Image (tube, rainbow over all chains, first blue to last red):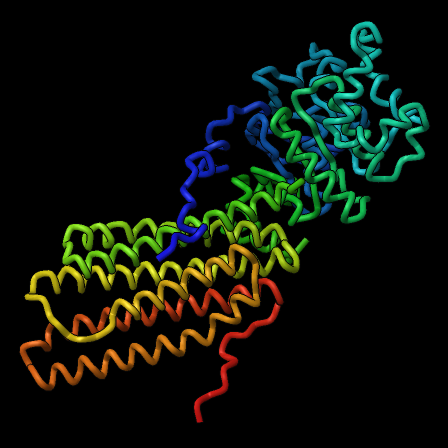
Length: 276
Length: 220
């Protein structure tokens, strides 16, 4: 009998490399130990101990008010900007205690970039939005400023759409483009970590899909922690998922496990939409 | 350019095709073992069945993970179809093992001139399975639909072989053990063709979103 195309297919060993193996091999970049946070007398985080591996996507999920955004903001000390906040326990990045008063916050936030729910470009040109922080860090045209701007816009999958209007206002871009510009701006200074607080929740499905693709591309270079209310988004883009409820970390595991056979009933009820 | 999700879907399809390749090889080797009275080859078919079993589990695991990512429309059908096709291929592997087992038993007995056309049945069954898999590879629902009536011809040939073997056993009781082995082989080939037909029906569902299973008019 003639051989069919099906018979000629061989197993590719490279294709067999599983996501689980990558997760097991990834070293921890961010770790929290017995982390508690209070807004005045109200406790928003309760003894959170969590390891976040590098160059993977970790999703924080949980109902509103569960503490996921608060925890995210601990990683670049954004909570310092809020009155009456008190933190106990440890947050270490690359082994360094970032809660220490000696920590240089500018250096910390250079290392830990952030993208917010609503895009917030500066009221400046597209080019200037990306170039601004680079200039603050001492890069000029002779040092390759334009090249870094271009590379950042390319990495944010925005270059082809804006290359002919780099010097027009960023406020003229669509919502999805503005959010990708904010990502370009965040990655321009080469942070180790990218924090994303519901980065696609204000976008339409197509723009959301582009952001998700971008996150999957960026994880080869950056450690990404994302807060999302969209369960399928967490399933699509993250390697690990942490589920929070009322300030407690309920379950933290490989995303594949959280969405197919979570250890806790509460997690299953949440990811399947039964509460929250 | 493919999205990450499309790449994952392509990976699932690739895994299924690799599994299909193993299943086809198993059937072919089982038949070779039968015809050549090659016990060693028959043992190899049995041992390799666990590879096909593992593929079924992997396709299911991968399929469930992809379902959690909320695919829509044709992607959703592809995942559901992939899981069902893998189940059919696993059964094809089981049938190959059954044939290999009977090949081993027959090799221990004197050859039997049964006067039945087992090779033709094997040719038809494998050809149907291969054509169904090609229709899957090529996303060709017309080719898949055209295959479905061929299953009836294979059913009829299996019935003819069973009748011939029954007659042989009645005429010469010395042949009973060997003829029963051959009957099991013929039934396995007929089942392989059924799995090929099932896969063809899945291709129609995949491409046209129309479920044509169990739609044949019942025999009056």
